Amino acid sequence: MKNSAYTNLEYSFQDEELFQLALTHKSLSSHNNERLEFLGDAILNLYVSERLFNTYGNLKEGKLTRFKASIVSRENLHRVAINLELSNHIKLGKGESLQGNSILGNVLEALIGAIFLDSDYSETKNVLDNIFKDDFLKLVEEEELKDPKSTLQELIQKQYQSLPIYSLNEQISDKKENQFEVTCSVVEGNLVTQGIGNTRKGAELNAASNMLELIQK
Image 1 (cartoon, rainbow, N blue to C red):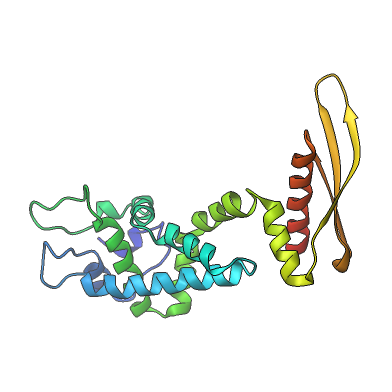
Image 2 (image 1 turned 90 degrees about the vertical axis):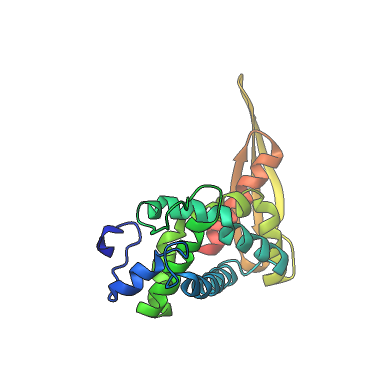
């Protein structure tokens, strides 16, 4: 099997032997992927830490650590490996199984180490950007946008040493619902956004989310 079969990986190895070694479990041979796994684990942790640090400038160490842990967890690496269809190509010894263990995730780490040795860190990051794209999008949706008011407050406090201001504009009533309109203002940055919701809190959350989008542009 040629490594070009890994269309989801979006990387073609120059060294085919290195690629095959990354797929070889210790149950099959003493010449196996354990050293590559060790290297890949370190590279993955560096990559995730670096990307989180550069992406979430307003988050403290504790939340960055929690974010990283969720991405590099055994469960998540297992899921990513399944999406890459690695289970179809791992080379196991007789009687060994992929059930109830961390072999899939370990092979993914070995492949990361192999890609690094086959290319460089910059190219490895490009591959990892593709592999973990959904994980970082999920963090944005579940953590940043889950409570945009808290995220915005931390950001404005850090940048301007002040707080965003919310003011109620109007309440529109009809037969079906009450609708609130709120203005969010960052005076020091001369920034203003509007938010609409069925409750005042919902309108404030919407206005804060719009403000985050405005700031990030």
